[in-house]
Every structure is written in C-alpha cells, then in structure tokens.
Length: 390
Image 1 (cartoon, rainbow, N blue to C red):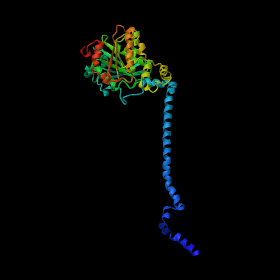
Image 2 (tube, helix red, strand yellow):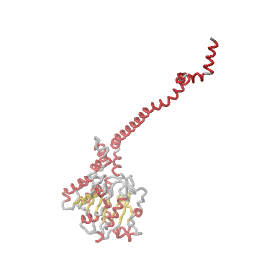
Image 3 (cartoon, helix red, strand yellow):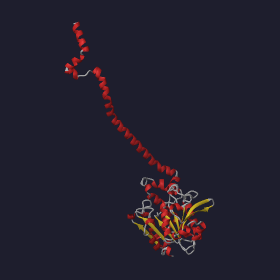
Image 4 (tube, rainbow, N blue to C red):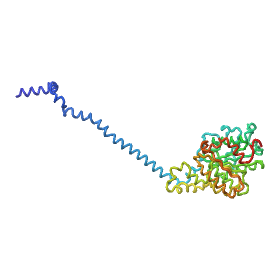
C-alpha cells in the first residue's frame, strides 16, 4: 500500500503533465484552486466596463440637468434684477457704452473718408462739452482742405440747405452707416451737422432723454444763428434719434419756430412699444408681468420718447422712411406712426409722406442710404430742385 501510494504521489507530482495530457476530461476542466482567481481577475475589467456605461449615462444626464437648472435660474432672475435695478434697463435702451467701430479717433473724421468735415466741441451747459462734426456740401471739398473752424462756420451762410442729424443708440457719430449717409447728403448739396449726445462718444456727461433733447435743441439754435435766414434747416432722426427728433420739433413748434421739415428714418411710436417689439425681448415677451418687470423699469428712468404723442403738437412737413425688413424697429411701428401723423390736426395743411422700402432691397434697419431713389425722394418731398443746382 505504501509503495502504491508513493507511486501515485510521485506520479501526481512528478509526472502530472503526462496524466493531464492523456485524460481529456482533466484537460477540459481547469483547476479552480489555481486558475480560478486568475480567471476571475481577468473577467473583472470587462465587467467594470459594462457596469460603467449606465453610470456614465447617468453622469451626462446629471450634468445636462444641472445646466438646464442654471439656465432656468438665470432666465428667471433677469426680470427681478432689472426690476430691482432699473438703471440697467436704461443702459440697455441707450447702449451708449457700445462704441462701434472701436479705436476710432473722432477728432479725425478724415480717417473715415470725410475729407471735408470739421470736428469741434460745444458746451450746451457749463462744464459739459459735446463733440460735433460739420460736413460741408461735396462741391466745397477742395476749398475745405486745410481749413479751420472759422472757414467752416462761414460756409453756413452759403446758398445751401442744412440737415441736423440725430443718430440712434449705440456707437458714435463716426459709425459706418452714419458716415455713409453724411456722404450721400453731402453729395446732394447739404451741410450735415451731427453730434454725439452727452454720454456718447467723446462727449461729457451721462445719457438721459431730457439731456439728449436739450443737446439737440442747443445745436439747432446754434446752427440757426449761423445759417442764411433764407436757407432751410431740416431735422433728420434715425431709430432712437427719431424720438429725440420729435421731442425737439415739438418744443420748436410750441415756441412758434418749427423747422422746415422733419425726416424720420426707421421710427417707432413710443419706447414701450418699441421695447416690446424688439428682438431682444422675444424670450420674455409672453412672460406674465412682462410690462411690470421690463417696461415699467424704462418708465421709472423717465424714458418715454413718445413720438405718437408728439405728433399732435408738430406743425411742419413730415417724411417717414422705413424698410419692410427692419428687425430692430418693426415696420408696423413706422406705419402706425404715419397713420397718427396723417390724422393729427396740427399737421393739417402740411405734407405728411410715408415711403416704404421692400424687403427685397435688404435695407433692414440702417441701410436706406443705399437707395438710388433717395435723392429724388428728398427733392420731391422738399419741393425743391437738387440743392447743387440752386
């Protein structure tokens, strides 16, 4: 028995390889004691990967939920922030802090292609200066080279009409679309006087509706004193500047000295209706309490620009220009303002004209100056020939 036992022991240890090779059952059944743990270790990475996929999906879903919650919180908080800090809404109306194009030197209109423009500064109030540009009619550009302010002032007594241009919000008097309009009007034989309201460009002070209107009135009186009394002075407002223009003309009419005509490019009825129609308000327009949160915050800053109300006090010819594809000030607001003007008793006997520009022309909010019809529209409305021929 010992020998057999010993031989079996010897065979199991010393010649184990031959027994495993000869026994197919043993060959197919690996030893659990030795191979089991190693096999289990090899299976764990695969199992981890399969288990990780659901956790990874849950992680992405959690991040998405957190992002949505943050966006929702931001969306809901904005109305309350504006309500608590109405000055924010005023900044959004004026956008005077947006200076486009950047790095422009307003003291050098020549850099913008205006080689017959003089830059200077006036003080509508003590200690408050505003930047002004005077562009002479195109036919004077040769004489204008190297000339100083006195020469430009003297040209205002020439036989050419003048336009006081009131720009809209954001940017400066050197904005590209504004410069292009100056060039068009100058080529038609007009003096063009434009300026940056207090708080805009290189002008001092802070913006307000009252301050903007006061600056415009000061410039109008300054210009009227220097113009030949026989030469017309027109007021042209664009976008937010149309609100300033109707405020100005209302004051002039109330004191018995209306301008020769008022041109409104891309106008609105009043700032509340414009704010409600502006594309930026789209995400909140149907929010309950929209008026209370946003529009009342504008009114709290004494910002009205009520051109619709002003129309019942204006007594001079009115021309309204509006592009049908204007996304900033919707076309229907300009049309509505025209309807009110046409019905105004103070405008009876004065020419009131509305000129729409089809969407196919792609003039949008600020490119009406591109219209080849603009010279004939102006001369027909003013009832005059081309100023260059006068």
